[in-house]
Image 1 (cartoon, rainbow, N blue to C red):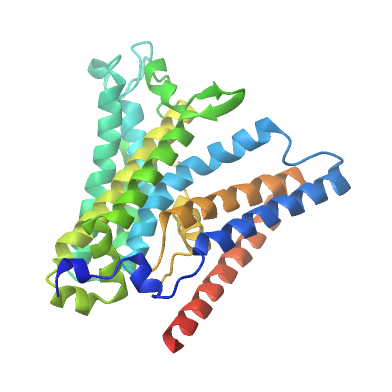
Image 2: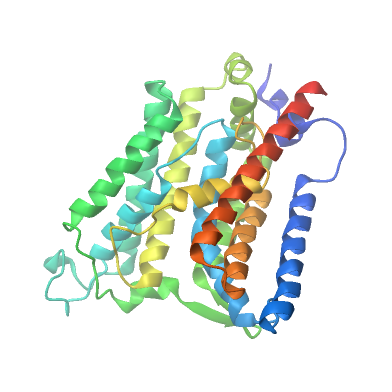
Length: 347
């Protein structure tokens, strides 16, 4: 079997022509937004959707999770999982922030390296994420341990390293040239944060890679049927390392963006981000069984999470209740995914 015959996303889902799954997910997003709009007028006496500032906050909040979710989606398509992304965000944020400090800080982590170009801090954060991803991928591909265990170990280790790096102390007084990457710009009268622009660029690039390149075909083939992929001549181990490395790199990018937005680095940054990223991918139609998923669906799933969080806050729903409802939605998304898988198997 040649590489041209390897199943892509359309082949994995089925040969019949049908509407893209993103259409139904988009319908859910629109429905949720309309419900919050109606409830807003009933209980708050204000519009949920007509507030530009609120919409800007929503897309800013989801941008970091979205960057992580794009990488996590690719891992899940291979029938894997990445539990380490949130901890990698925290570690990358600490390392990047430590190299972005000004000489005005009397307690700089590296006094001799203050006032440097922000490019070094960015590259350091990306490097941390890339290294973590390579380690994850190597553990999964070379030792054959389950991805859950491999990335769980990285999750604990990366969080420990983030705390050890400065002995639990935050990294503050960052250079303005670095924090610029977390700022917003007015585009046609709408405040658009730079992290959102980066998120969209990352999503577009990864969507093209998954849909139109050999990398994408191999990723779907491994998740759909690893035995068939191996017979087809795919280097499964090498490809899995690439997929996890990309996921780690994007987690590192998210860490840099988080530090730039907060103008500081803190060991607790990124806590539970991996769960939100996985939830966004599953809500967006990515199957935990592997072989099915699209970046466009993940983007919509990420926005759904942002709208839910902002909507509950708008309606003054308590934080505890928000977590309960979010958990129910995640479980419901997994149940729906399992139902789809069973129907597909029967077909």
